[in-house]
Length: 68
Image (cartoon, rainbow, N blue to C red; front, top):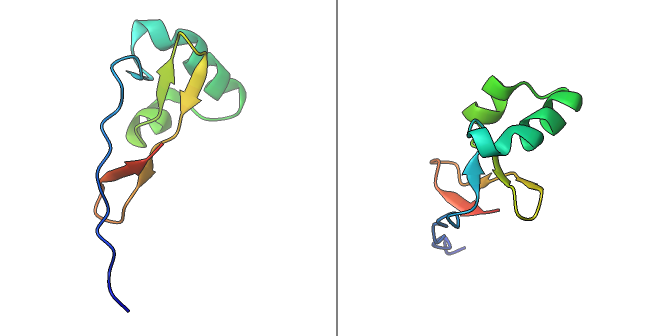
């Protein structure tokens, strides 16, 4: 079986780190679901204030973001 090459993904400019001051409502939502901010930061979770969306990155085994 041939190994597939995965393309890396770059987040759009409005997908802010969960620790950003404009991500406060996203961080509060995660906290309400039992996910503390330090864990969210560790896993690269982001927030889009315009869409009010929490974004969970999909990582390849070597740490390359391959989806969102």
